[in-house]
Length: 177
Image: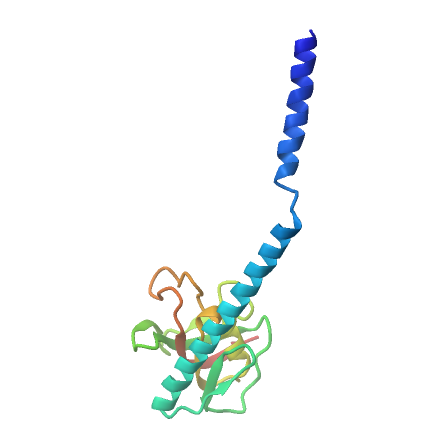
């Protein structure tokens, strides 16, 4: 009987120790985590700056007059109107061409068959939503979305490769109320 009690107590003690061993962090573990975070921040800033330089050179070669936002998005509204402004959760009818910096056309939605999107919906990428917020109904713009605001490290797993900057030539046909 004493063996069973000893074994039971030993098993409980061992279980408690093994469960806690994964949760306890030493000061050196915390320092390593902070150090790794710092390294990732530095690497991401470097890549974002590199992307910005590439986009700026691309626009310069084409004589595009782009404006850069604080997030790193670039845009040029080349056909302006006095149409209605766009707000969060609006539904839009848009046509667009999405291509890569190397000229590869990924997607085309022509004005004869526009697509309906909802601002702020999860499947509309953050960078595109931001760019559309600068536009009004009836306007045309070029929006250059760096990879971290577009499809990120994975791409869209269809036509847009991983870590790709996407250029949208976009026309807002109508804001649906």
